[in-house]
Length: 503
Image 1 (cartoon, one colour):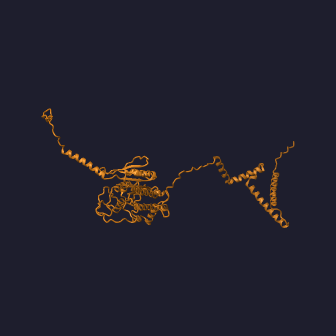
Image 2: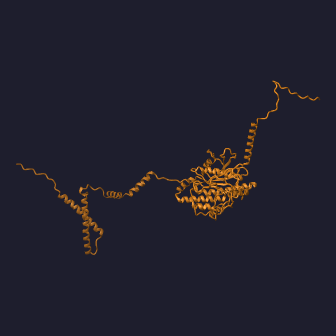
Image 3: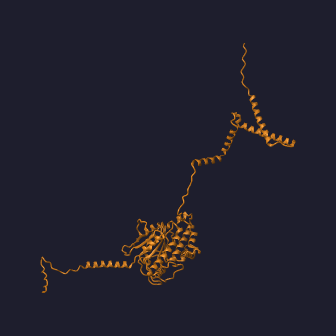
């Protein structure tokens, strides 16, 4: 078979364009495209290098959680009542490629709702999850009970997560938390960068005695501006209630110190408290502490927290993890026994009923502001009295208590007994006549008494006293009748004049 000769290219002409190799793009376009793809790949690598962080927000109902989310997340929207809530916390820096933080929150502490938290979190959640516990200052009597329940759930959840994932490195997490507490340095008043950690001291007494998994924990007390109003409602004003609120702060700080946790107060009257809390959340999630016991220059932080602790402003308390100690807690208001509070907390956490628990200390200091309502309230039947019967009963009481009515009823009874007497003269109703009759009756009684005494001396037996009184009254009325008859006979009667004799 003959070989096919090579095909000849036509010559270039006006109708046939010359075939040329593609020209390279302009240098500016090539460099720009290359820089764009490089930036995209670099940002993707950084996004892969930064793991996704999570926040578990634990709160009972009506504790200010919705308002706290609106302030911290930075957007206000209506949230549907779901079995498990979800939100995103974005960084303020638009140029920052930090992935958003997932915020997961159950509606309450019901066990069925808390089980959904573990299924909502991604696999291996312990190294990348922080827990925020919300308490309410408008209900101070429930604070310690809710805090005890939430921290107990955190310990149980961390133990289950570590058991399900042997590679979770719980010991490493505890060492990381201990290193964070040891290397904490309070920011200076001026913005001066920290050049050296200095000498690393061991943890103080009562610090990180609990929280074996090393979970980052924040305790947030909302509505701190209402603490004085609560004192007014309970009838405790002035220094007495202020002393108790300081005691609450000391107890919360003692518990947070044992767990390596931070304490924040938030209030609508103090907007910066929400901003500080937001900054601290990013700082706590993305700050990697140096190895345990390391000294030297600190590594640059992606999200620094340049704010100093504040324990004097009662509605804006802020205690970062690593700043506090038993000495600082006690000096706020003495006397305060931090060791006793720590022992009481351990007894309550271990459910040792024989020992003094933290609930006993709390109930002795803080009055109960939340009385549980009855599960099935019984309707109380009220029987009302008939209106006419009620009015008649009130009228009888008024008549019985009327002094004039007594004499009126006595006069009516006498009239009914003796009948109606004929008309009396005007002289019988005159006051001088009554007085004269009373005087004559008294003198007649005295005369009868004298005669009776004379008769008693002469006779061996004296007549009955009632007989003497009856005789005196009889004589008195007989005298009155005789006087009336004498007066009537003495009155002249008109007579006709005799006719004159005829002359």
